[in-house]
Image (cartoon, rainbow, N blue to C red; front, side, top):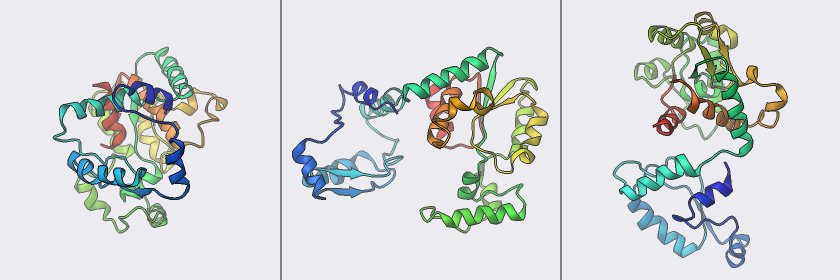
Length: 268
């Protein structure tokens, strides 16, 4: 993100420092600060009555893993407004990512309308969720090994069929093709795949490619040199997909995750 834009856009609301004052920095250098993880989905009283006293006591509190830590229901309107302002105005991607995003959109627009398909069917997504529908036994084993390899993924033993029946799995590529056809999407429309590498590769993508032959990705629209600075940074590649998603004529997510929610909020 563009840090300077973040600070400037919130200057009337919050005082943000890029560096700590020397006397406070000295405390940090001496290890005299508290590092903690806020409790998820906490309301404002938690921050007022538990976090604020810690800040006053320790002077510096490092909050790690701050995503989804503030409850988004029953917030006072002024806090909800600030939350929206942060998410959809203060958080702006760096100029390099924004420029590349505009270039991808321009290439797509020159050929007409386009649909963005956020196809959540990457290996890490399937391993984390335990959703193995359509995978063979070797792939199921591989995904299970990956799940055990990450100690911070708490859920290890997962019943894929149960998860699927509960509606907690992403659509498979095969199901996605059926849904798009059922919605009456034009067979020849440009479909931009906003995703990482699809698990199972061309074999799993075959039904989508057969039903909608005009599939494109950032890797096919841009030359390799355009992506070389972002290639090994998955979050920056996702940021590029996000910018294209915002400008799409139709946005179709296959999983109700963060990307789907934030694109919806931003477009609204």
